[in-house]
Amino acid sequence: MSGNPIRLKPGKLPAPLLAELLGRIEHRDPRVLLGPGVGRDAALISFGATTLIAKTDPVTFATDLIGWYAVQVNANDIAVCGGVPKWFLATVLLPDGSAPETATSIFEQLRSAAGSLGVELVGGHTEVTTGVSRPIVVGLMLGEAPASGTLSPGTARPGDPVILTKGIAIEGTALLAREAHGRLRAAGVTRAVIERAGQFLFDPGISVVKDARAALSAGGVTAMHDPTEGGLATALAELAAAAGCGIEVQAGKVQVFPETRSLCDALDADPWGLIASGALLIAASPGAEGGIIARLAGEGVQATVIGRLTDAGEGSSVVEGVRRRPLPVFERDEIARLLE
Image (tube, rainbow, N blue to C red; front, side, top):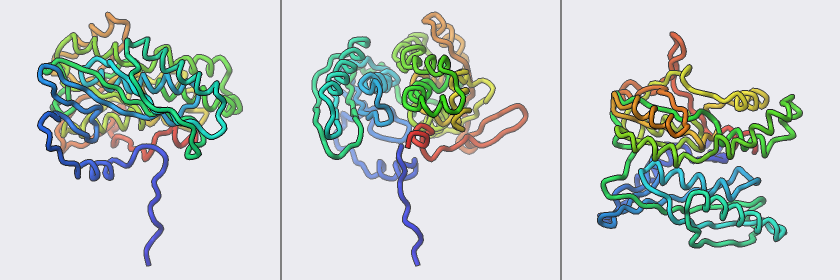
C-alpha cells in the first residue's frame, strides 16, 4: 500500500528536486555562458565584447509596495554577477475585483524603483485574473557587463573567506512589519519597533547594487550571492554548492538586527531562515577581504567576515563557541510559514 503523496509547500522547490529538474536542461547555443543551476543568480549570454545578464524573479509574499520589491530584488541578481541593471519588464497579475487604484499604485512603485536605479521600464504585461487571490508581480531584469567583467558563483574556492554586508534579515523584517502588523502588536511588539522595521525596505534598504559595485571595485572577489528566499542559511548552502565546496560559519559574526530579533522572537521565527534581500554574501581570495571591507565602509556599508569556504568533504557547519553544528536547513522560508 502506497503512503501519503508528497505535497509541495509554498516557497522554493526543495534543492534536490530543483537540481534534478535543472540537470535535464541541455544548452545548444555556445553563447550561453551560464545557465540555470542551484545557487546561480542569473543567466550569462555572450554578445561578443558585452555579456547580457538576465534574471526573472516573482514577488509573492508582499502586498504592500510589491512593485518596489520586484525591481530591487531582480536588480540585485544582476549586480552580483558583476553587471549593471539596465532594462526591466514586469508581469502584473491582479485578483478579480481589484480597484483601478491598485494597478496605479503598483505602476508608480515600478516607475519609482526603476528610476532610483537608473533602470528603463521597457515592457511587460498586466491583467486581472481569477487565478490569484492577491497581486503578484513577476519581474524580468536585463543587464550588461564587459565580457571580462562577469562573475559566477562557481569560481569561489576552498579557503576563500566569506563576507556578509549589513546583516539579516532586512527584507523579511520589513515584510513582517508590513504584512503581520496586527499579530506583532498582539504578541507585544511596540509600534515604534514595528514602524522602524517597516522602514527597513528603504533603510538599510533591500538593494545590494551599491554593495556589489563597491566590492568588485576593490578587487579580489571570487563570487557573490544574494540571500533571498530561504534566508542566510539557504544562501550559504547555495554559495557553497555552486562552488563545489563546504562552508564553515561563525555564528557570533552574523549581525542580526535588533528589530529582526524582536519580530522573530514574537512570532517564534528563526532569522537565519527569513528572506534576507539587502544583505550580500561575498567570497574573496584569501588576503583580499580587508580591502573589500574597507572599500565597502567607504561607501557607508558595514561588512564582516563570517566564515570561509572549505573542502566539500568537510560539509557545511556553524561554529558557536566550542560547539559545532550542521548548517540549518529550512524546507521553506520562514516568511512563507508565517504568512501562509
